[in-house]
Image 1 (cartoon, rainbow, N blue to C red):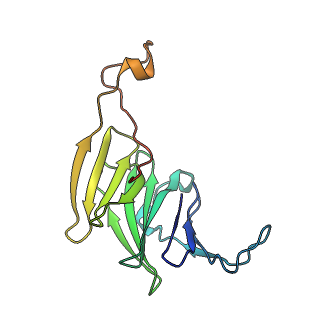
Image 2: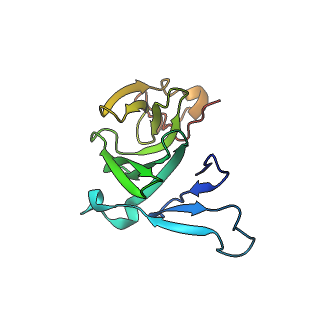
Image 3: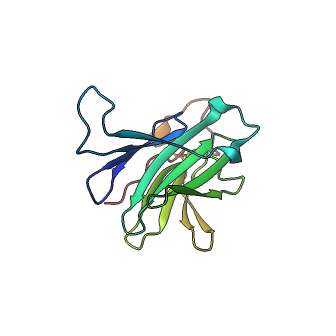
Length: 167
């Protein structure tokens, strides 16, 4: 997942990477690491979880607040949202309730509210960091028209929302 700041620089994460990456686009050049800076992610909240299960999901840059929002997960075990403050290079960590343990997609709406998908369920949610409130929404019911009819399909199937995009 990648996003740009108001100066045209790039922030990105990769699945299974324990880092946020910053690219100064004026210094970057093909086939080099020029202009690329690694920013290690705080993983203390995942102590006791197999490191092979810990992954980043997506990012969203908030240019007004000078922050980068990052989803972190240990699929099926734990979910977090991280806020990287680009001015002072610090992180704020928000633990999610146990039923939201697979946050992947993240986007800011026009009012700078965060919207997140939980890939392990049929849920997407609104997260307000100021008061840490979460409002959950269910995606449409899984349908055999989409998944096909097979012995493994049940009415309890999840839709597994992944990415999210603001048009």
